[in-house]
Structure formats: C-alpha cells, structure tokens
Length: 84
Image (cartoon, rainbow, N blue to C red):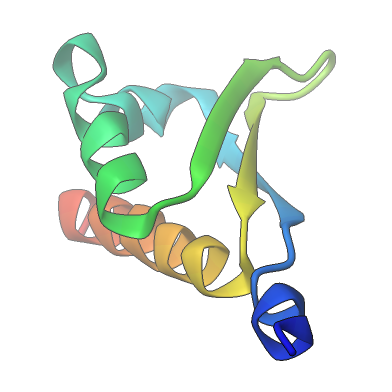
C-alpha cells in the first residue's frame, strides 16, 4: 500500500509577513535569491503586494511540511545574516 507515502507528501501552506524594506534581500537581484531558496527547499514561494495599512508583504510558502520548514529557515537565516 502506498498510503504511507501519500500522507507524507501532503501539501500545506504557511504565510509569513516580511517588512517591505527587506523584501528585496529575500528576492535578490532579478529573483536570484528567491529562486535559490525555491530550489533548495522544493517549496513554492509567492510574494504578495504590500498589505494595506502596514509596511509588510505577505509571503506564502506552499509544499510539504519539510519543504515549508526548510524554506522558512532559509528565509529567516538569510534575513538575520543580512541584518546582524
């Protein structure tokens, strides 16, 4: 039975709020950094428009739980290394 494999490959979604003034660091020049994070994590990452009334951008990460965790880790690690 392949039930165990299918349940392990379930897709979920996670949202992050990233300040608009640092979103450029996550995206990188011509999208290079975000593409690198997508490739390394295997997750889909969508960056939304600035949330009205705030200085934040919605970042939606979609994939299996491991991909999402890895993408979040890579994004937060990248941001903390840029701003420490």
